[in-house]
Length: 356
Image 1 (cartoon, rainbow, N blue to C red):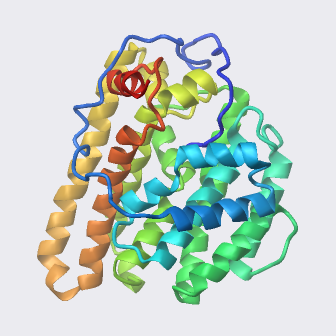
Image 2 (cartoon, rainbow, N blue to C red):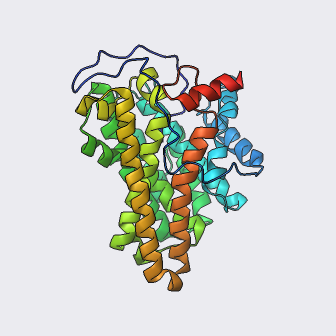
């Protein structure tokens, strides 16, 4: 997940073949051809109490620094994402999912933004990650606000799930932290641009998608048990994570690359590796994302045809992952979070114009 940090734009580094960043004013490109868009209308659900409870937790922990910072949280309306991607969640389920999303955002904000608290301090990053994971996995008590928040989330999850499920969730969190976020933070700190394939491998971890796919399992039908590691199910999980993480890179391109000088973005990686112009790189990225989306649909249909009749939990899980791919893209397009009068995407620029 990309960070919610709201900082002033900074000039990009000089572009280069493997280092640096793209120019600040690329020609306009279009998002409309993205195949996973347009499948989910905005949900009509009042989640204001869920959002308020999370807001108060973040204030109490100091993760929202003051009321001015809290008003930025209000304007961002992060709870809307949870209502889009978990449409059947109960209030208790929606609460813990929203809290987890905010934990991811807060951690990312501290370690990966240019002026985040631990930006460039790898030892401090590892320490806070280790403490938070220990709180989540073992119930250890630590003073760091992120660890305290993780401990609260652990308690809420154990009201809904078994201890064995929680350990699987913690495995996904560990992957997010140590195979994703720290790899991405190193590229950001050193201003290095990975190749496309290595980038996609760590981007799925860095996005936190493997953790939210565990939440999809919990919310849409129960615990899969040994089916979780079935080769076809494992491939479906990876396709869901890749499609969802990579389409976010389109919408967040301006915020990540142009404003925050972050190289961990598919469009930028394709431009740097292959020497494409911005519109050509976007076309290539759309193809990469659509390939994964359609592969997920084909494999999901095959698995359901072979096993669906006898495994309703698996049916719900596959449907829930498809909703995550599609609904998160619709939220990214329609929420206003990424609209900007300087966006390199015509649709997001148009939204900003209409909102004036």
